[in-house]
Length: 215
Image 1 (tube, rainbow, N blue to C red):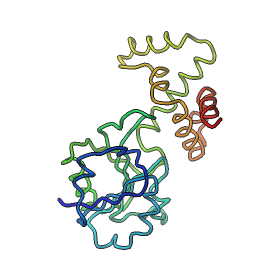
Image 2: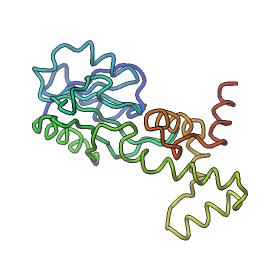
Image 3: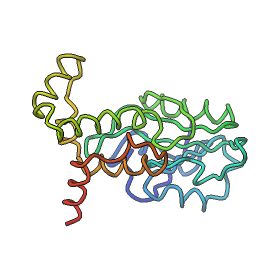
């Protein structure tokens, strides 16, 4: 299936060259808008009804921020997407695909085809801030940081216990230090503002890292 790629600023999903981006044509039945300004580019794109699917790269926000919402009946051929990425680490091979209650099945099927033919694994979720992974793992990372502050155990012992006890390849403290505590702050702050759940409120160490990045 031919698809078009529209670049709209720096992309977290595709920070460098990738076969999916390189394979884009001048036009196509599917349009993929990538970059930090993808939402603005989408709003200036006037041909959505003539396409099978239009994809908008998301940050932590909901797709409805860009498409509008209508009493739980929203949905069209427009979908959101994000390739999961922790902080400064390389993006994963997982694409979280965001649909709305009345998203067209043809649009969903075409989108799956484009991503899967490019070698990605696709997970479909509803239109919620943070989507699947961040909603599940960020409270866990916050809890680990708070237990470290409380002196429950050293960072090394916390990481070792979770790796040996749960079979994780990497402990939460070392993972956050490797990928960026400041980025963890940004994601959790956005989720906290969106959901109001204290479990998402950035842990102290993440706030400190964010302040250090600003200074």
